[in-house]
Image (cartoon, rainbow, N blue to C red):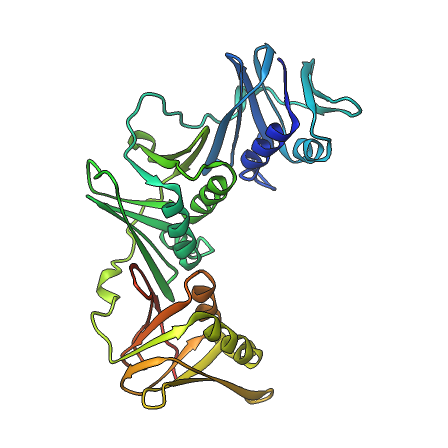
Length: 374
């Protein structure tokens, strides 16, 4: 194997594929990135057995071959050298990297035991989604998914494909987010697919790094392997699908409300920062919202017996009944931090029913937060 390429391109795409390399893999070869030269291009591949990323980049290929190289050390070296031509040659068991003033050699492992990741060639995509819409959906939903594997289905992001629409849904049992996207072309079939949230977050990163504004993300399903492939330009992200039943979430979405508040998101966040000084010391980060419809105010308060108490009041357009309800300050901060709009809507019914967050003039998003005992 012998090839040359530009440092900036090599570094950029090496960093993308290296993100899925496990820091403590069960198999030593999973520390490595696989390199394959073929037909004047370089293919880079990495996997942790749950997620795989592969990408083609242009290169001057002098001889073809395949080898695996330690990802972390190679990435650090390539990121540290100047933006200039990089010459790479496989010499015996060493992957040798040369530039004008720098050189390094890395021990290799043969590709024989490297796991194969799925490849799509002539298959027709299940659907295409504009990259801007997909990034927005991931940003608005992924934070609501569980961060542990105690219940694997809750560590997944549900993709509900329903004809001309796709819903992205995430929940950890304490909150739930749903973002809907209208498809430009109807899907050929309705499906419910549960994707690890880590894979969706990596997909968002890839889009931010390589996609152009006009590009769509193509999604392929490989049913015999229970996997999805997301194609962003020359980059393919392959993810296993989670098996299991996602909670039947529709039945917990309130169909009405008794109190509605149209609020400035930044003012809401500022009040949260003040109240959280005490609330973060309380079990569950509990704070209380006292919503006064007549005065058009929300008073946010927290109290801890051995620390003290505080409160912050801000105004909004409030209609309906007065209500007092308790939430975790962390959960409120999370949803407000993942929205970009100036105005948000909070709807409540009773102190024991979920609070509902929406975005003003945007019916595609809904977020539920479970209340705490007053």
